[in-house]
Amino acid sequence: MRRHYDGKALEDLQNRDEPTIFNLGVSGDTTDDLLVRIENETKARIWQDQPVIVAIAIGTNDDVFESYNPKAPAESYRLNLQNIIDKVKPIAQSVILIGSTACDEKLTNPVPWADISYTNHELERAEKVIKEISESNNVTFIPMFSEFKAALDAGDDLLEDGLHPNDNGHKFIADKILLALDAHLQVNQDI
Image (tube, rainbow, N blue to C red; front, side, top):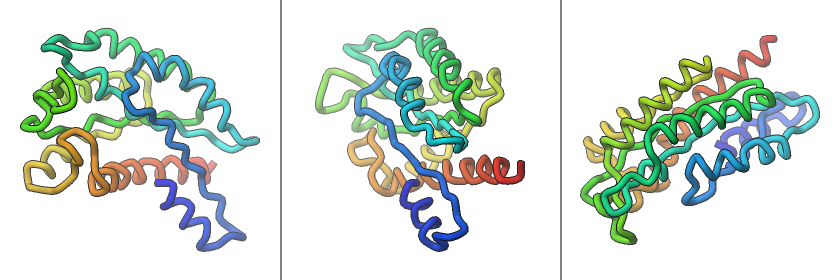
């Protein structure tokens, strides 16, 4: 996504004011972890009077099962997601929630690197929570699970290890997010 907007800015250095994208993802983070750091990390990237759009994709690590027990109860995930939005809404002009990607359960139930499992049932459940939270907070929701799963089922190579997106998977996700970001940027330009 950053390359996309940097490339657009290079097309016309005189007349384009494209956004700067910061990927603040941390491998292994859960909503508990993001809740602790999101407000400060967002504030640290505010530049003068530029609008701030916060796009949040979190939850896969909340949906993991360790030794067949859920790592985070569903209600904890819901509450954390709401608290994350409460922290960023006052400092952002727009908030976007991104749905969950699907996994290849043959490789993730369990994963080979630990006694943990990821299932599409849990990832889809998380996306439903994301959608509900986005609706109740009047923020943009980008569904991901169904289209990602359909692409996987059609044989598209989107996952590195059954869970983490590879380059094709990241492009799939970025293309969907860019559509929403471009719409938000257009609204801000029209004001």
